[in-house]
Image (tube, rainbow, N blue to C red; front, side, top):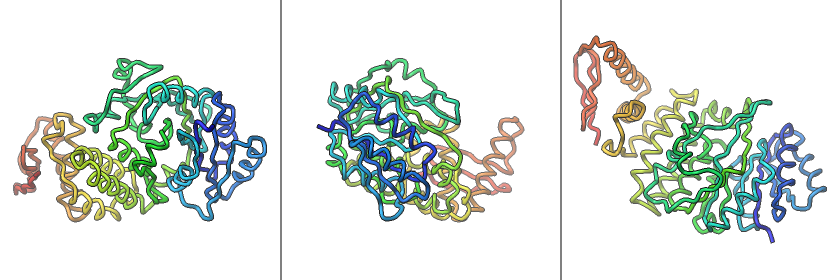
Length: 378
């Protein structure tokens, strides 16, 4: 009986793979299979896999014929899995010895679709620190669809007191969870076949749109390694990063329209903030501007559902309007800089009306050299 299928995509991680595999084969939960997806790396990773497979017959190696990327590698693992539950472990990370057993016991106890740990340690070189995270923000976008959540190892009250992780990262990832395999298959929850992009974002959003029951066990520890030249950093410097992320977000939108159209506005609110963040991360902003402009023209954000009293929320929404209204990158920069100047003048209490932006209920009024340009929000 296989209780958990552990899926490990492997690509050029020879310096970290041994630590990862050792942490998995030494789990206190023994009824597992370890599916390692060889994604055609160029280093010694495949030989390490073969050596470990000789030592432990729970390890299965599946080799792609060509490099496909992280998402498609995970898809291969899902399709080949035989366990009742699925766990994704990135091959440069590692887990505590009781990681799987704690999560498995909790998901069985409460019979939930997903169990997660928020006990995530950041590993940078030899230094290890705890992520500071806010589970309430993780669920807030789709709060209306959730059933009661179950917590073990940490109280709901303590979670509310946690400071938000500045990168807003750990909760939109595939790892740090166990998934009921039948839940993924019944809801067609696979990763999009894109090699470079934030595939976890799309997977995460479609996952939540299915209103999963969720439990937590904070006793399990996931060690997430931050390293130079990681896939995330490489993707941000990739010229197709924005285009790929637009395709991923469009996939979420199409999925929502088909399955839960009443949640489309909630999804739009999450996506527009996310895409502005991705846009600023990428170094090819000018080259990719027209793509995010066209994408924003297709989505509607109802500002009445936003907390525009929050300065960050207001800034993000204004930028969304600026991108949506500007058909060229330089117009966008002009509008953005005008708003920034307006804010600087306002906070210095030296206000004048040659340049400025008025954020009204239904219109964004941009003033250039005394000329008013009104952009309707609705």
